[in-house]
Amino acid sequence: MNRAAAFPRPRRGLWIIILAVLCLCAVRSTNSAHAGTNLDNAPVLHKARYLHSYRHGFTPSISTSLNHPFRQMIRIGLRYDYYLANWVGIGLDFGYGLGLDTSLMSSVVAKRSDFEATSFGFDAMLGFTLIPFYGKMSWLGSPSTRYDVFVRFAGGVVQLKGDGPLLPTEIGFAPSVSLGAHFFVGTQMAVTIELKDTIISMYPGSSANAGVSERSLENMLSLQLGILFHFPQSVEIGP
Image 1 (cartoon, helix red, strand yellow):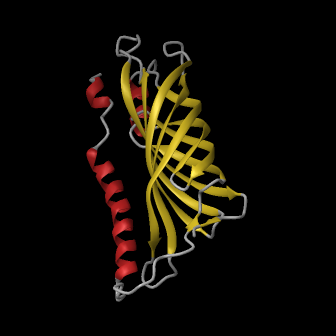
Image 2: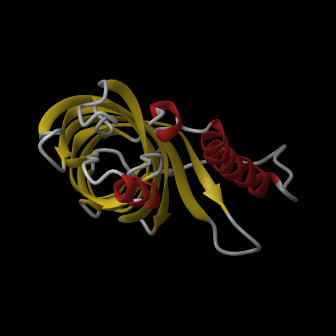
Image 3: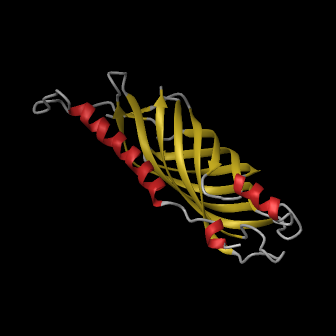
């Protein structure tokens, strides 16, 4: 089997689409703020709400893999963060993945019954979140929604689950980087969307001669949806 063809690299188009959507949010919020408003003598903004500062955040989530050809990996996760300021937080991520066969996996197994593939099991990572900008946006006259865009850097352990004797289950160490956004519903809850890239050394599948294919460094992309719950209820108000 041609491994390069069977295990395609992530497409640049996916990143471009996600970045375009996030940039559109920023442009839209800016346009909404300035449309039809003369700011020459406008007062300085007071009493800004810092929705993250000095608060705990709990985020249950569900995600799906985007580029593993043999496994559709569904992950249930839970994240805890403590925000040291409105723009920075540290926390922990925990999750467990369930690997489902893709159509390619089914077709390969139909021809080679001894074929095996690797998927993710549990994971635990320490994370560091930066929030470079935030604002408000409104669509078609709807009430404005607060949002922010974040980048998260993390690292920790990932369980690599083999499904047969050729690919045993093992523990790997992996860094990850995420690009995402929070869309706030009130001051205590936000919907999150996140594109995550986990970089890990793994055996994607068994080789054609009933052996183990060469271990390689892979970029495993996933799309994650979650709901952030903030505590305590009180929000820091600016001067």
